[in-house]
Amino acid sequence: MPDHGQHFVAIVGGAVAGSVAAEILAGHGIRTAVIEQNKRPYGKIEDGLPRWHAEQCRQEYARIDERLRKPGIYFVPCTKLGRDVEFRDLCENWGFSAVILANGAWRDRDLGVPGCEPYVDRGLIYQNPFIYWFNHKNEKDYDGPRYEAPDETLVVGGGLASIDVVKILQLENYGRALQARGIQPSLPGSRAQRHRRDLQTARHPARRVGCEGVSSDLPPARAGYAAGATARECHARSDCEN
Ligand SMILES: Cc1cc2nc3c(=O)[nH]c(=O)nc-3n(C[C@H](O)[C@H](O)[C@H](O)COP(=O)(O)OP(=O)(O)OC[C@H]3O[C@@H](n4cnc5c(N)ncnc54)[C@H](O)[C@@H]3O)c2cc1C
Image (cartoon, rainbow, N blue to C red; front, side, top):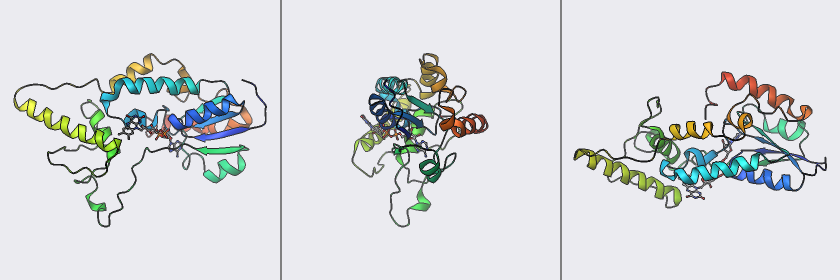
């Protein structure tokens, strides 16, 4: 990659949008630091999609990995904008030419219906935690919220995400019906099992799977804060397990 040495751009979020932005900029000789709050840069692909999308997930993981491996792209995991790095600080003091927000759709938008708040997780369930529960509920060490998926559930919204939620409700219902007849239903392996397998076959080791090697190749003047804070804090933090 030609390094024109002029621009260095920060990208917040390392998933589909962030990795594509980094790749495009790399193609123009512009270096980027991709700041990701999690260990792994897969965003919604990882736990926004129900677990039957196994093959699609694997393909998307590989695409993201390939983009982030390109020269001039420095992946900085376990670093959250707003917690580890202040927005104003990033914009004004780090010397980046630009900051691109590719922080995506990992949190649900509030329903916005007055009075609905007390019902959250008590009958009113947002899609992200629901999919996460579905993907992980059968794992031995799953200790997150547990949801019911009763018949005659109302799904609010009619996009792709809603269709997946409807499918989960159907699967849960069919599963219950089959179990009642003594048949054990089965679905593709759990996320945790696949994560372990993916990590074993990962091709760009330290940059992707942990904090250790994270920004060792980041130019020191730019990376000092991120590398130090990231490596130190990541080991101490439980919210950087993803
Ligand atoms: C249920 C469901 C089904 C879908 N089905 C399909 C499908 O079949 N086909 C398809 O093409 N698309 C599908 N999509 C859409 C697709 O998953 C998303 O459009 C795409 O993954 C979004 O990518 P993104 O990079 O914009 O955002 P995200 O994947 O949300 O990535 C944002 C990244 O930013 C990071 N981040 C957020 N905040 C911070 C912060 N403060 N500091 C640092 N990092 C941060 C997050 O950790 C995350 O890694 C589906 C989505 C859902 C929810």
